[in-house]
Length: 280
Length: 277
Image (cartoon, each protein chain N blue to C red):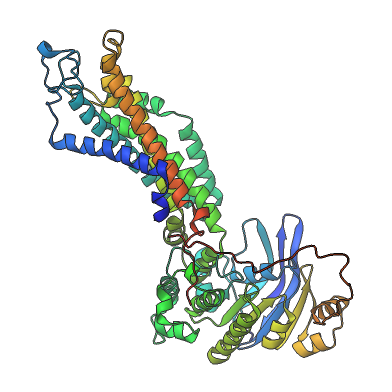
């Protein structure tokens, strides 16, 4: 644990993402102004005490919008990670535990899903059900499934060759029990690190989908949607685009730093270096 | 009726034959040693008997327990091998799940081997039987010494009260004194539980100390089978003779005087390791 606090980029990454997550959570109960409140009379205000980041072309408070938008981005990305890990990890474990035809099927399925970027899946879903935040979650979640399946399979394959898996098999444990009792705990660190990285990619993908109009719809908001509203005014009021853009950049960089730091801290190869004193 | 009989066992990887034409039989309570160099097919023989052969290995021949051929069906095999066969692996560090306290792992083996009969076994009893204390059950594999890990491994193998114990080089990762302790433990357990032992090793001394019958394996084939005293005392085959000769321990006097001046000198060397969290 002490090693975690000696890792500056992990601290920085966790602190910055934690700060944005906190802002997002606060927006659930309080924002400086309601985000749907349109007041043309106070549009394009410069940052002031009343409006910390100014107001947009419809007179909405930009600080409130960014807070609520961050919440949407985090929720969409987190649910997408949940979908991806929830389906991908069991698929990857099954591929590693059974091998043979199951493995072949999982790998071909993930190849197939990999061939469709999140945008294509989102367009497909939008054509069928119309644009919404839920569709963005589904599209990014489906995109996450093969990522987690591959990470889980790769990690599990290297654990599977160890004798304790053979010992468990000899004791009479079935494939599912081996996968969940012996393989999953040993690859949990890999999954957590991948989850952090997919979270940042998910936020980026959500911003992208909302920007092209396939994600979150007004009056709800997201960072991508704020950016989209501001793009036509970029030359006149650049700060309207800069604020949500910078927010996205900071969140993504922070999550990547946290993911890299986490990997360094809980890498299985580094794990045995400290605190392995043999006690009689 | 023999407890375990293996006839014409062969294991192939593609066209390469790793094990060929191996036959052996094991009676109740008998101790049989398989000895040979690395890569001679000792471990593959054990894995074939337990049905744990790696993917890509093709097996031929027949393996019977109590004159019943072992099932080829994975599920039936899983039930059978846990109840009849226990196995101790070579490297106890990888044979124990690093993220599970050893008490939980032994407990899992007990649950899986529990037939619901009167011979219900308890974890503390089992730990005591292999010479571990209750507090060791809460430790992780990396917090135990090599000998303790191997004891934990033996406890797992015993959990289902098997008739056959297969030990695949159980002492090669241990120092000499710990080796002796673990061998004595295995010997004692086999006597007390009347288990048959299939002991695989490259160490003639430990096979000699444990087994009454021994097979010498070379290039995947048995070259000589017989009583331990007879095979080691009066080897018939050339390979066995070489093996016995190589195991002899003679101190040779150092005949090379140092040439020139001192090349490397060590004075009061200390190396400290900082204990991380």
